[in-house]
Amino acid sequence: MERQFDEELKHLKQMLLRMADTAQEMTGLAVRALAERKEDLIGQVFKLEESVNKMEIEIENDVLRLLALRQPAASDLRLLTAILKINNDLERVADQACNIAETAEYLLKEPPIKPLIDIPSMAEFVQKMIRRSIEAFVNHDPVLAQKVCEEDDKVDQLNEKIFRVLLTYMMEDPKSITRAVDLILVARNLERIADHATNISEDVVFIEEGKNIKHHAQETK
Image (tube, rainbow, N blue to C red; front, side, top):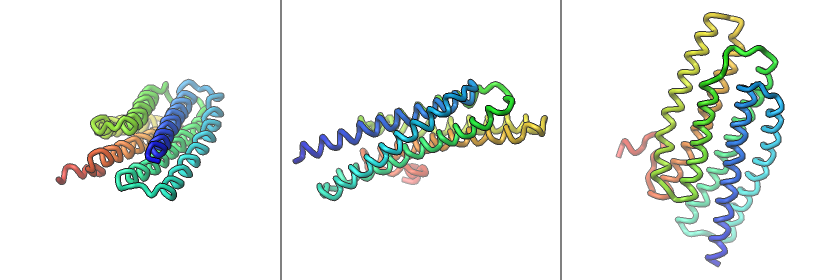
């Protein structure tokens, strides 16, 4: 019975890995569509969202079934609860990627304000955060999870830099305001993806060490 439970947990972790990979891919495709002005990539993002939604439902159903049938002990209960939360975070990552794709769909109808450099760099960084947060979960690695949390500050700095640059463009050319605001929203979507990676990493630290580091709770101890 215990072995079967372990196998079911392993399957859930594998599904989370696939879900994370797909959400990362969606993010990369959405930003590439915008930066390289490739409209065909937008459709790929929306198609992949269907896969993420199916995985989310399957993972949630499997966790709820295990909770009902196995009546897990405290440690396993904490793990299953974390899987539900991570599942939700990854689905939200996919939603943010779709938001970027929708914005790209509009922006590709307009001339570009400038070549995009910081936004693709930011996208690459947050994709890495998602990947590392799931690796930390699967490998029971709170040290890696803590590092991911610390990386969120760099994303905030990139977001602020992008905002300042685009604000300058808006001040110099009022006709660019709508397009600049849309790019600011793209950066905001990427910042939120980083927030979801941070959420996952905070859950890993809590599972492995019983320590709550949300909102820098460790600083108050």
